[in-house]
Image 1 (cartoon, protein in one colour):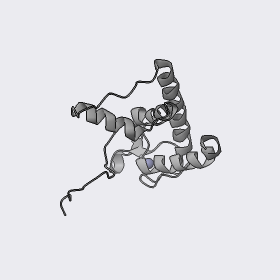
Image 2 (cartoon, rainbow, N blue to C red):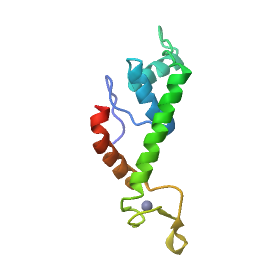
Image 3 (cartoon, rainbow, N blue to C red):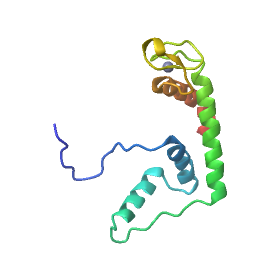
Image 4 (spheres, rainbow, N blue to C red):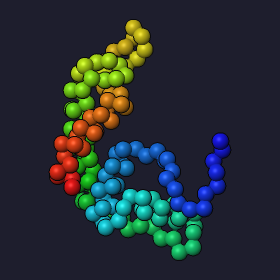
Length: 131
Ligand SMILES: [Zn+2]
């Protein structure tokens, strides 16, 4: 079925790099805003909508702190992921196997479903600190 016209706001799927999207959530909250609102304002400005203004940019040191916090969180998630079995390549722990058939070898990346499971576990164990 083709997309149906909508009369209002609705969720849209857009791809972003984690290294930009994840710190942006923290930064937006620190500035009393939210990530969705900032993206909407950027888009409205880009579309030259009347009255649209660019959102205020956070100070560089605040961005640096948010980036560092995300990198630490990402490292923890990867560490957890390596302790979980991978539903895609079948390893019980350690690096995922990348490649096909007999060419499968331990790689530097981790399969998405394994990372998502590790992210859920991380969120469970850190929910007290994150509110
Ligand atoms: Zn895997």
